[in-house]
Structures are given as structure tokens and as C-alpha cells.
Length: 373
Ligand code: ADP
Ligand code: MG
Image (cartoon, rainbow, N blue to C red):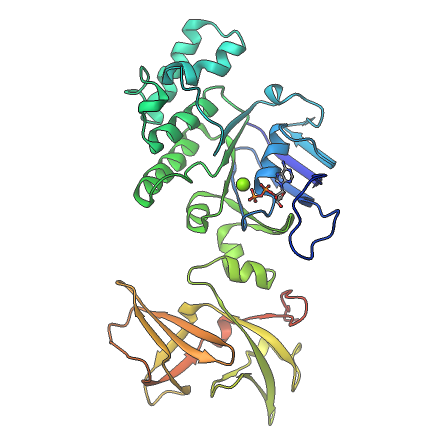
């Protein structure tokens, strides 16, 4: 295992498909820097096309880099051939060889390196039970289920005792239940082999439950790097705030209003006033527009005698364990999640309170977090 350092990594594909409005010379990966400690489990998360796979392929040496440096352990590997980088890969489209048995598929890279038969056998006997593929070793890939194939794929990646394990959407073809099983297995595996691991996923629950640290990407750029708690509790911008969390954070434009010596957030076209927390007093002023973020679990229905705003329910959804209730606010909705059993219906008037100390403020123009001084 080894430490991994990405320094100002850039990738430009000459034939990159352009998104609407995107510059001709846009980077698929744009000034991406990251530091992973020995044995850490890192997740890269972001929408489709944001550069996750490209980043992993550059680390693996499967893709040339346009600029920057990749350091594994103490070695700059920019010019090191992929098979000499000590990397185990399990990529979504990294297919097994159909004519070979599972055993030979797992052994393939070791054979290419002329590892002795008995060492190969010992390694496979060690790894196969970890991934529960020991009963499949004599089978051909064609006979395996999707989940079994992906487990063999991971076994093949780790059998070389990689310094670094790269997993690109390793569970993408599995149904929900199988994903959960394999997710637990990957976590256990990481605890056992403690190999520095990077997993790419678009499934945030998967990422949040597996990793020590999360890197959130958008349009080739790193937005935030931190523990799942840091990223959830303290998102640096509106994109991260809206991306992490399910259902997503409510983010709505509000106007700051001053009444006597107090400030309030006023929602558009809705009778909701929230006191501005004292810590924001140094950064707000009367009439200012801000983007206000609040998680659905931090919006509450309170008793009639409490302080709060009377609002009418627009949508009521029963989600089993919880209920999701939405209120129309200007162009959008303010949504809350409650475990309260009461069956509300559309049009019911309730008293709402927003936990103002849990609110986040973002700049209307830039989307960057407004930091209270
Ligand atoms: P992700 O894995 O996050 O979905 P990718 O790294 O695959 O994103 O792609 C990032 C961007 O680079 C996308 O705009 C994609 O269209 C483009 N891209 C990826 N691979 C190639 C390629 N081989 N040639 C041209 N453009 C590519
Ligand atoms: Mg990808």
C-alpha cells in the first residue's frame, strides 16, 4: 500500500464531446489535486461526465495526462508503464476473459509476470474466500451472475497485492440488494487488506457508507475534499450542498429583511419568516438576496402555540418509515422529512419552524458559501 498524490492534474481530450456552451478547449479534468494517506479509502463522487473515470484512468496509466503529476509512494509515475505502477483495477467495462475459468482469470496478471504456479495457487486460495468466489474457480465467466462477475473482477484486481486499488463503479450492474451485500464485502475487504483504495461511484449512499474521505467533482474540477461528515455538514458551495443528501437540501432564494434591530429571511411569495442566526449578522444587510440552504430534516412542523409561520401543505408523501411534506415557495418547494405518524393532506395549514442555526448561506451569483465572520 502507498500514499497517492495528485498534483494539478489536467486532461484535455482533443475530440471531447462538448456540452452546450462549453469552451472548445474545455478540460475533462481541470487542475485536480488530491492527497490520500496510506491505507485510506477515498470516494470520488460527481455527476455523469464530470471526469471521474478519466481521473482513475490517468492514475492507472491507461490515459495520457495533459499536465500535472501523479505520485505513488515516493515515485512520480507519470512515465511509469501501467503494469509497473502496482495498481489493481476493477473497472466497470474491464471484462473477464470468456474462454478462461475464473481461476485463470484471477491468475492472468500473475502469469503474465511469470509468477510461479504454487505462489499463484496460494494467492488465489487466500483471496477467493475473501470475495466468496472459492466455489466458482472452475467455472467460465459466461455461467456467472452479474454480482459473481463483479466479485471475480475485484478478486483479479487485488490478487497482485496492489499498492493502490482503483474501483470504478464496481457495483453498477447490480440490483439494490446485491449492491448492499457487495458494499459490505468491499468494506470488510478494505479492513482486511488495508490497501489504499479509490472508489468511483455516482451513488452517494454507497460513497458515504464506505469511505474515509470524499472528493466531490463537477465539470472536471474538485469542489470539496473531506470526510463524509464534513462534506455533509459544511458544504463549500451550493453544488455540493445540493448534491450530497437525500432528499437534497432545500436551497431557495430569500430576501433579508430588517425589522427594528433584527434580521429575518423572507421566502418569495410565501408567508415564511425565519430569524437570521446571530452569526450571520456581520454578513447580511436589509434587502440583500441570498440562497438559503436547509436540510429537510431541519424543517419542523410545530405545535399551534409555538412561534413559526402558518403554511399550506402542497404535497404529502408517505415513504414508509418517514413522511415527506412539501410547501410551495415562489418557484420552488420547501420540503421537510418527518417521522411523525400524522396523516396530513394537501391544503392542510400547519405551523412551520426552520432550525435557523442549521441554515447555510450561499452567494446568489457565485453559489459559494457565505462564511459568517
Ligand atoms: P465520468 O466517469 O465522471 O462519468 P468521464 O471521465 O468518463 O466522466 O468523462 C469526462 C469527460 O470527458 C466527458 O465529457 C466525456 O465525454 C469526455 N471523454 C471521456 N473519455 C473520452 C474520450 N476517450 N474521448 C473524448 N472525450 C472523452
Ligand atoms: Mg465513469
